[in-house]
Length: 224
Image (cartoon, rainbow, N blue to C red; front, side, top):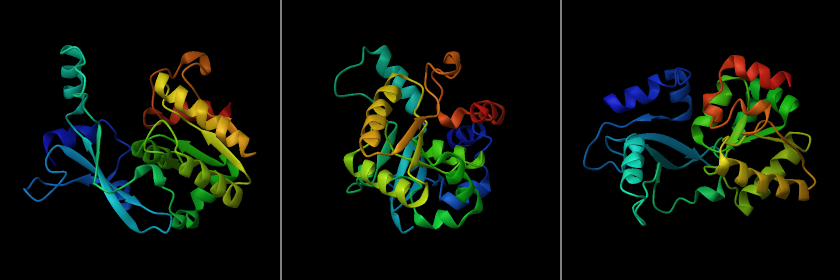
């Protein structure tokens, strides 16, 4: 891996080689033909049948670009993007981790029985929750599209006894986006609850993302 990619993985010790291979996650050595060459960490996206639809890349230099953008006064039209998607792929039409073959895994059935469908924002959040024994799906954003709401509703009704638990990013954007999602799911008569937020647990998890949850923290959250 490049130094940036290696550092990215080291900061996430739960991101094991086995997990990365299973989900089709990793770093592509740079060359002129690769859309995600050198500075991107790549994720595989599948449809509900488990077929590979597309790929996305997480910019490993995003934090540097973000700080530079802030120092320059947040110029309009130059805001850096954390993720890059292949042209023609509509992330709002899919759920990351929403492929039906997952239901065959024993931990998925156990998780659905305990928590219903767990909904998070990003790809890393889905991967981290799996290492904690939780079956989650990701929106690829902090806001759900109408298509994603319909898919979540159908999945909950078919596989999770009509239950969904939300785990947004614990920041202003996550709170706002998932408040809207909670309302839409409730209107669908889904039994929906909030797993955490920036203000729950005495604001202990403010600014945290699901990928940041430690096993000890998860035990505290789960027991509540």
